[in-house]
Image (cartoon, rainbow, N blue to C red; front, side, top):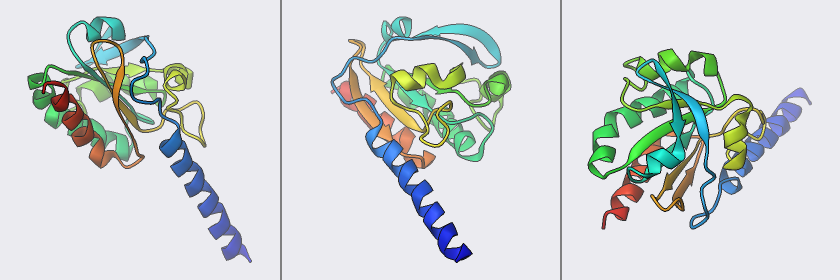
Length: 181
């Protein structure tokens, strides 16, 4: 009986996670909510303003659950490795999290994560994530793993939502490169 209850609980948790990532994201061709957030680049604090970043070109906004967690570490590292490709396509990248925001200064500069190559922004209480429909179903004060490409016009041109961090970078890079064509 205990085994059956455990299996049912795991199934419900999995279904809730899949539902939150499959249906939560904002849609393509809708305006991206503007935001300003406290952020870090290579350990240095600054204020990130989406409106200012969009003046320079497309922006990849990727939400991740929490700094210094295995999937988020991997995702940040993968974005860090590809940052020159994003820049070559005229795009900038910002990571946003509601989890472990007190650790973002270190997270932004550590070589196994961001390597100081792109900013990460704090989203206490997941206020920005809520505007983007990117909150975890089971922990509503944390962001899930959803990535957006926002055109300089402010419209969302690509969305990818999946708790597996491995495909986000390529999805976003392909979308940014398609904008140049």
